[in-house]
Amino acid sequence: MSSTNVAETMPKADPSAAISVRSLWKVFGPSADKVVGTDLSTLSRKELLSQTGCVAAVRDVTFDVAPGEVFVVMGLSGSGKSTLVRCLTRLIEPTAGEILVEGADLMHADDAQLRELRRHKFSMVFQHFGLLPHRKVIDNVAYGLEVRGMKKPERHARAEEVIALVGLDGYEQSYPDQLSGGMQQRVGLGRALAVDPDIMFFDEPFSALDPLIRRGMQDEVIRLHHDMRKTMVFITHDLSEALRLGDRILIMRDGAMVQLGTPDQLVGAPADEYVREFTKDIAKSHVLTLRWVMRPPRDGEALDGVELSPDLVVRDAMRQVIGGSSPVKVVEDGELLGIVDKDDILKLIVAEPEEPQ
Image 1 (cartoon, rainbow, N blue to C red):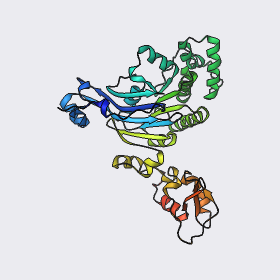
Image 2: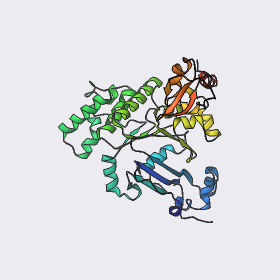
Image 3: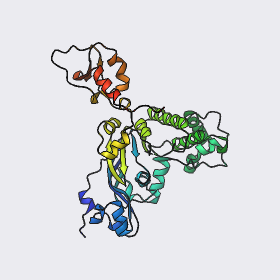
């Protein structure tokens, strides 16, 4: 069985990234450390399990998360997304690879350093809220500050600020079982925010909520990100949620990366049939920007005086394009990149899936 030194072939991590991951593996099973860097690592999940009794839950994953970015990891059950996020915080120990957090090597952090990182640098919001049932809302929100040793008046003052931020004014003295599921998740979100982390991890936090409450919580995350510019890593199995929240999206399958890109890249240029199947029911006009539909102007073609950004979503440009008497210009930094006319827009809309009745 041939072997390769993984460290020698690993691309360099980016020290300027909030999180930089290189060739990350997590293998469960006997002799898991003998899988990475050998011929065994090329086997499919089924073949690897059959031959070794091991499961490669995360397979050779590499990406960077920029400061202030909402980075979404998406996939079906068993894709490895939740294992990945737990490796990023070392709640699960990776088998191999490299993780830098704001330039610091997480893989070589000792237990004391990890505790400090989890208290001051990271916060996690899970699907199961994990609230303390015997404590009131204000004490649940302040719990991380209590663990840090902050005195009660100071931590309650901070908790009250965060409670207002997540829309729970008036519920400070309530107990968790007196709240709806959506309100309980707001408490969990508040607890994560109270410690003022640099990086927030969300592991399918809204999947158990009703659709309307879920959308409201997504709105809350979008608002908080806009106001606070926290770096966020968000795990979900829902493509609509991923497209709504993510600056970039990583799609995983069987522990491996399938495609990493912006929402419009995934919808406009799916990497393979797996991604294409995911995105087939998405209304493209809600995701694609004018970059995807613009074309070069024809000789002598009259142009409207309207100038639009190439990063404007098609849906948001419809009124100006369809309402004009001639094509509109797509301009960036004073340069004409292309034009868009009614036919370009209508072709995209006609090809879209019908809205469910």
